[in-house]
Length: 467
Image (cartoon, rainbow, N blue to C red):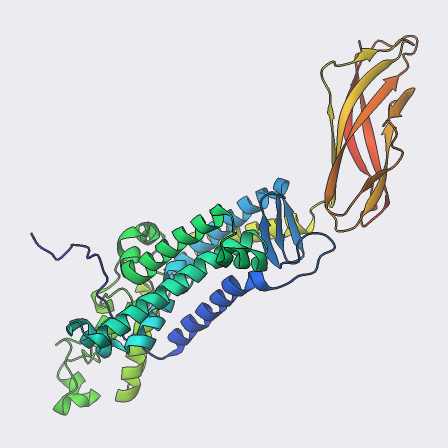
C-alpha cells in the first residue's frame, strides 16, 4: 500500500524560523490575542452592582458582563447579530485577501505558533530539531523532548483554566481549582481543553488545516481572479529555462536572464518556513493558509542577491498576468455592505437598548371575576426589569380606562435595586356603567419613573375582559 497519502499520527514538519514584516505581524497578533485571552479575566472592573471582573459570563445569574456592558438573557439576539457579522466579515476578507484569517487569527494557528515557539526554544531551530529527531534516545533527547511536552501540557492546561475562569470569579475559581474544591464542571472543562489543545496544537498541527478544517474545503469558492493571495511569480522565477542555483556565472542576474533562467535560486527556504509544508511554487493549494512567511523568506534571499523583492508576493491572478486587479465587484461590494449593515445594526442595538423594561400578562384563570358590588375584576402579573446600575422607584397607573381602580395590594411605590427585577400582582376593578356592551376594552398601564437613570415613562398596552 502506498504511504504517500497516509496521515501520520505525529507531525514530522519542522518549519524553519524566519524574520520579516509578515513574521513580525504574526507575532504581534499572537501576543495581542494571548494578552486578551489570558489576562482579561484577571482585570478588575468596578460596577455599582455585580462582579468586579472585567469580563464574566454568569450563567446562574443570567448576566454577561463585558466591561460596562451588561447583557441579559433577553439580549441573546445580540449574539445572533455578532455571529452574522463574523460570518459576512470572514467572507468579505476572504474575497479580498484569501485565507488571511487562517494565517493570522485562527485559534489553531495561534496555538500551533506558540507551541512551535516553545519547541524551538527548547530544542533549537530546524536543523537542530531534525538532528534531534534522528538521533537515538539518550539523556539529551529524553530531556529536550520531555521538557517540550511538559511545556506544551502546561500551556494547554493554562488555556483550559483561562477559559473556565471566564464563567466565574477568576481568583476564587483558580484557588479552588488547585485546592481541589472547584466544581466538577470546571475540572471536566479543563481536562477536555487541555487534551484537545495539546493534541491539535502539539501533535496534529498542520493536519488540522489540511484534513480537519472545513473552511479549507469551501474557501476556494470565494476566490476569483482578483482575490489577493500569496502567489509565486512563475514567469519571473522560472524564465524559459527554469530555476537554477546561483553558482559561478549564474550569480549574475544578467547572465541568468541571458541563459533563460529566472530569479528563483531554488534555495527551498519558502518550503522550509511553511507551517503546512507546501511548496508555493506549485501554485494555489488547499494547504496554503496565506501566512506569507514564504514572502519573508524569499524577500530575504532577493535582498542578499541584490535583486528586486516580490518574486513571492500578495497579488491576484490578474496581477500575475499583468492585468488590473478589480476590487469593486458585485461580490466584494455585497459582502462589504452586509458587513457594514451588520456592524451598524449591532452597535445601534446595543446603544439603544432600554434600561427599563416592563410587561403585563393577564391571568386567564379566570378571565374575570364579578364582585359582590357588581364591579368586574381582572388580574394581571406585572413584571418590571431595571437594567440600569442605579436604584429606582416607579408608580403604576392606568390610562384610557375610566371608572377603573388599580389595586397593587399594600404597595404604593415600586422600588427596585440596581440591575434587578420584580413581579407584582395587579388587580383592576371596573365599575360597569349603564349602556356598557363592550366585552373587550383596550387600555394602557403607565409606569412612571420617580428617580433613577431612566426618566421617560413606559406604556404597556393591555386588554380588560368584560362578561
